[in-house]
Amino acid sequence: MITITAEYLTQNWNILQTSSILPTPLSEWDNGDAYTLASLGQFPSSKIAYAAIVVGDKQVSDFSLVIRLHKQTESVNAECFRAPSGDLYQVTAQIMIDKSYKDTEIKIASLVKDLTRRNQGLIETNLLKDAAVFIIGLGTGGIQIALDLAKAGVGKFKLMDPDRLEVGNISRHHAGISLVGRKKVSAAKDLILEKNPTAEVETYPLSAGHEQREALKELIEKSSVVICATDNRQSKLLINELAVTCRKPIIFGGAFRRAYGGQVFRVIPGSSPCYHCFVLAMPDKEADMEISSQRNADSIAYSDMPVAVEPGLSIDVTPIANMVSKLAIMELIKGKESTLHMLDRDFIAPWYFWINRPEPNTEYATIEPLSESADGLTILRWYGVDLEKDPACPTCGDFEGELRKQYGLVEGDKPSILPLPFSEPGLDKGNK
Image (cartoon, rainbow, N blue to C red; front, side, top):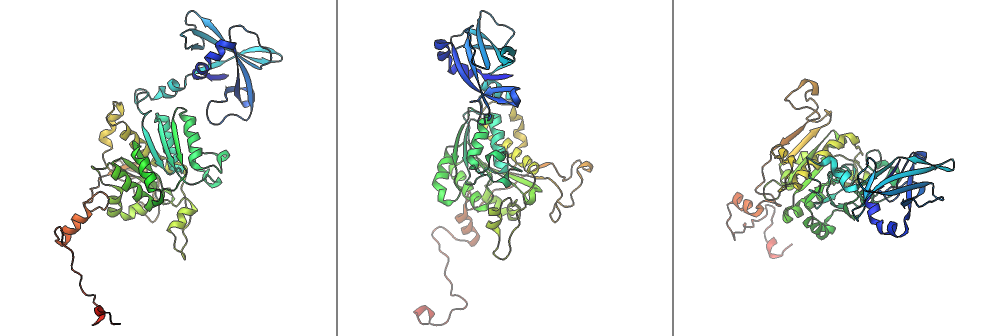
């Protein structure tokens, strides 16, 4: 079977009209069982065959594959192509076998139409094509979120991650062994374009630290939704602060240790608690994170007490990434018509958590078996938890005002400086 696209024929129509023949490289797959445009997608086959695309009956003999376009006066029960002129052409194909041409199956795909067809009814074809998503962290979760959103039709991506793919990543990452050594943002770009070739993808192989503060702020300002999939508190608090300042919705996703579960926290600046509120209210929950890399382990270890690298299974990260993607889509369709708004009432909490298994030495070790509970806490169910804004939050609250209330101070007051209990007479005079 041969697959080419209507877009390719349209782009090259002037050449076909002038010369009646267009040599075209095709990727050959499975010992000649399938051929696709070599320019279709980011990963062509290592074996290339050349086809001649011919308008009319012009004879060719030096191509192993021939694709012919025959002008029709009316629709026929066959693969057809509507030329830019409006004329209709029937498309057939032949392959050289034992020195003679034999008919073979051909498919004319329309990239935009065919890629979005299955989303129709839930998401209008072009509803998300102008949405810009900024994803920080392209590990196991971040790349899955990116691909989920690409498949849903999101048209603009900004990706940030400083790391390169290593062999050890491949057991969980969507990228395969052939991409080892590449920067994660570059591999992620190619994977996104494999799913949505019309997407616009910008890559930033940088760490999301304070040294990138201005760059982060600019990227956040230009985004519709921010997704933070980093693995340390410092970057999360910085990104949270910038998103609140820019008034952009931000979604945090992460797995618990060994991925026995995970949590998702969504921030809607001005109406919901921010991530700093979450850290202040539930520091133990926020600190429970998966140690998925040596760098991650080293960042929290003491010099005399190393931390083991204990990542979980890819299937245990999938539900968390899936939830982040759903919440991101719900933010992207705000103010737009979509039947997905039926979920608005279900996604009102700021914090969601999920348990993959009753991990020993955790508060979930004794939860009820999934098969025996209809309404109790169990594995493999999402739970939404309400959380109030912290009025004294240094990021989204009035920290100074609440501090003044606590100590009975008014504007302009300064706390008196009392002598230290260990002061010695004459110390304030410079005597030693």
